[in-house]
Image (cartoon, rainbow, N blue to C red):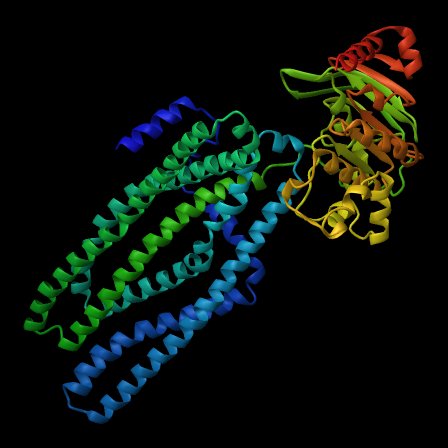
Amino acid sequence: MNKKKVNENVLKRFHYSTDSVIDKPFNWHQMLRLFSYMKPYRKNLLPLSIAMVIITTLVRLAIPILIGKYTIDKAIVEKDMSLLTILVTIIGSLYVLSYVANIFRIKWMNDLGQSVIYDLRKHLFTHVQNLSHRFFDQRSAGSILVRIMNDINSLQELFTNGAINLLMDLVLLFGIIIILFTLSPSLTIAVLLILPIMFFISTSLRRNIRRSWQLVRLKQAKMNSHLNESIQGIRVTQSFTQEKENMAFFDGVNWETYESWRVASQKNAMFRPMVEMTNALGTAVLIWYGTSLIQTGPLTIGVFVSFAFYLGMFWEPISRLGQVYNQLLMGMASSERIFEFLDEKPLVAEKENAIEIKDLQGRIQFEKVVFSYDENRTALNGIDLEIHAGQTVALVGHTGSGKTTIANLVSRFYDASSGVVKIDGMDIKDISLKSLRHQISVVLQDTFIFSGTIMDNIRFGRPDAKDEEVMSAAEAVGANFFIEKLSNGYLTEVEERGNVLSVGERQLLSFARSLLANPKILILDEATASIDTETELKIQNALKTLLSGRTAIIIAHRLSTIRESDCIFVLDHGHIIERGNHQQLMELQGEYHHLVKAQFQVNSAS
């Protein structure tokens, strides 16, 4: 009790946004959409699994009749030993057949279920990979991870057992009902009178159970999101000695996840005891009324035994159908979240007749370009600029002036709200995204290093590059000096984000990666901000050769990086307020002159 109170207090102190519970009626159309992922297997695994289900079901329906009506009423009552031997052999053979069929049913159903999960996860990951940057701006990495991992994992039981078991239990249930009415209509009606009670209670639970499983998914998303942030920001947490507060916050999120699972599982668990209680009532009716029918003559002992077998079998599919329905509820809760992502359309969409450009020249034009990240924040206000092919230009200005936004529009990570962005005289929207981005390379201040070798990371933008080409690119930017000192040189393994490397070393790797890709347009977004002065001098010398013949856009606060640029654009609140080379802007004595002087004073003071 104390633990719960502590965690509730923690959660009151910390507030974070999350998805909301989706409150909709059970959507069979959505479930059919989910099951459509089984279509590729309708000619192999699906029919094989169904065949084994049918064999198993028919065997189960045949055995009680053989035991009661024939073995007891015929062979035993009439003391026909030869018939008894034949029936025992047949029944034994049917059990063996059922055992073998079950082995293959489980094998093929597992193969089917895992294949569907594989396809669904691949589809979702591929779709997310192609979504626009704005999608990722609005969602945490943890929330996306939950969709791809947890929500899809929760569907495994549904596809592995639930879908096929649903068919088996429905066939078994209807078969049992038909046989029961054939054996004794009056006894069947008496026993089944209690079914409406069970269906009334179960129906009232459905919506509640579905909402509970939706809540579980939301709590898992919260916890994954917090875990991701905690791991990524561990240095900040430790530097501000916030470990205790962070642990308390995680404890609160962890408690919410635990509590949601407990409540959902508790509601799920209510169904089976309800079925067992109904089963007990049905058995009591069977014994009481069945004994009366035997005494009065309409019912034989063998038929009574068969009836008892079938009644026992009757509650099994009823119970399993409840479990399958719970799986469907869990599946719907997960599928709603999965399809929410799959239905997300890229805001940067490629035209059907998009042009493939194999060799860009690199001329860039902005014509009255306006861009807003949201309704309340305009990043660019009617920008007009032209960058000639092979020209090196620099974008300078205070933080938030629109420099990175221009670079994002050139790479078409976003589309302009209005106006036109052109490359080589063509509207950028008419060019295929793949051919456009294949010829543009972006080097960011925060370099991302993937798990793998140094060689793999440099080769990332051009997987078919030879080892010699990788080494030449590294040498060109001066990265070979530190790479050759590593334990295994270019084959040294680096973990995610390259934490074993210094910030400057990671930056040099990103330079080598971009240069190996041999882009026509090179964008350096604060790319030298984390590099020391000595390393920067090496890069400056390399850039003179490497930028030759390429269009380059340099975004930098360190003005020494952009001094040699052909043209410098000075931005302020989304407007270009000055343009020209370094000498021209210094003579103008405007905003650029002020920025240079301010930086010179800072450097002198340090």
